[in-house]
Image (cartoon, rainbow, N blue to C red):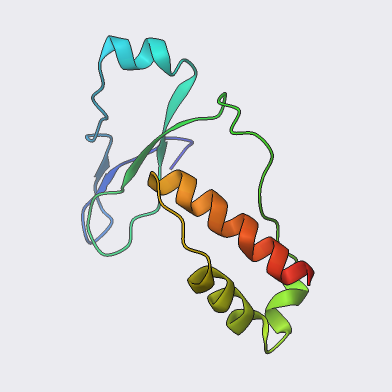
Length: 110
């Protein structure tokens, strides 16, 4: 693809184009300076999904990290499910996710 980020492919792969765009306001761009469009891999459709992301925003410390070896422990998935279901949080979705990850981390430490 010669470094181009094509967003549409003919199903037979013979034609490709950069036809998809993200539309946002000047106010949005001023608030989220440094935002960029990323073309994700397509799956079933002939269009690639686009992701608008901002790498310059500091969300604070990461509440959760994982080691690949945990996934080989047979009880890992059950412990994670239990931790998620036992911890009830209200608020906006990003806050709920952050709090549930913190609770899962504490459960895994035990």
